[in-house]
Each structure stands twice: as C-alpha cells, then as structure tokens.
Image (cartoon, rainbow, N blue to C red; front, side, top):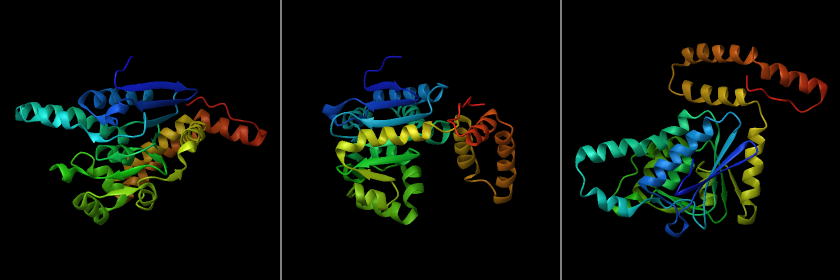
Length: 261
C-alpha cells in the first residue's frame, strides 16, 4: 500500500520503514502513527521479511508527539480523546506482538515518543549524533504510553529520574542506560544497521519467532509455569523442518535453506 508520512521499502529479507516528515523532525502525528502501525504489521505478516528497520529521514529519528495535534485535543471531547488514544497506543503494543525483530536505526534526536520507539525495538543501533530524552514534562505532558518500554529498558529508579528531570542525553549515555545496544559513526549507521538486520534475517524465521514468543510470553509468567510453556515451544522447535535443515547444513558445511516451518 502507499503511504504519505513514511517510506516503506523491502531489501531482500529486510523491510525498512522510514519516518518521512524531515522538515518537522519526523513527529509522531496521528497520521504517521497510524501509517507506522500499518507498515510494521504489513512487514510482520510478510513471510519473506525476517527483520524490520525503523529510522527517520533527514537529521532526526523522531521528535516525538506533534504539538499541533496536542492543540487540537483541547477542542475534543473525552470520548474522542479516549478512542484516539487507544488507536495511537496500538503502535506501542507492537513490540510485544510482532514476531519479526524490530531494529531501531537512530540517526539523530529521538525525543519523547521517539525515545519510546527506540525502547520498543528489540535491537537498537545509534549514530554518535543521536540524542534521546523523556522531554514530556517540559510541555506539561507525561510519557504515559511509552513508560512501560522505557522502564523495562532502564529500570524503575532510572525511569523516575529520566521522567522527572526531562533531560536530554547522548548516544553514549543511552547505551549506558541500555536504551541502545551499539553506537557507530553517522557515516556508518546505514551500513551497520543493514548488516545487523541481515544477520538476524539469516537465521531460521521459525526459531526467531519462537524466541520472541518465549521471551514475551514468559516475562510475567509464574516461574514454574514458564518452564512448562518453554518445554512446549521446545517441542515445536525440535520437530521443525528448520532444525533438521540447520543440523544438516552444519554437518555438510553449507548455508542452510530455511523453510520457516
């Protein structure tokens, strides 16, 4: 499908989704949020796509929420705001719902909701020029929707500090906080992101899907019940075509030909 606020492209087994409002620093407008949600779902439902990259056009990753949208909210009723809020929240549920790894390629400032997007992604690689921060309190807002993802990345005490100080921090500090995994020079970001995406995409699609399933399903599960659930997933893995192919390819010293089954 065609999009107006994002770019969607497929490069071999990788989908690249680019927030494409560079003159506005790629804010999460109502429309861009809707299109981003649709694009991630489109990629996730494509059996040929094994990794999804999220990035921003121009010099920013995402400046977060759009102030013009916030101004319009003053004229809306509580029910309108409620249902629109539920719509936008769907984007940030995707991190725990998709079965295709999300990789954030943080090319510049990722503030407010932009930081939330980075935290939601399963892997994150940032340019040395990237800056992150929960800046909502500066505008009289609260980082409600993104709070769960940032908190799980940085921990409770650090989340409280980031939220209440609304400070902006560097890519190096973001790595120390566990919000990004790797940092590279700006000129290397695109190539290094694609290299990482292709590495993930080279593995058995079924095994990757089972990995995400195992991680998120057992996160809040009782310890002993989690072992039972993981034993079930293990059975699925052991009886899969991909495991047989992976073992054969290893013994025959060749690249595996994954079926995703």
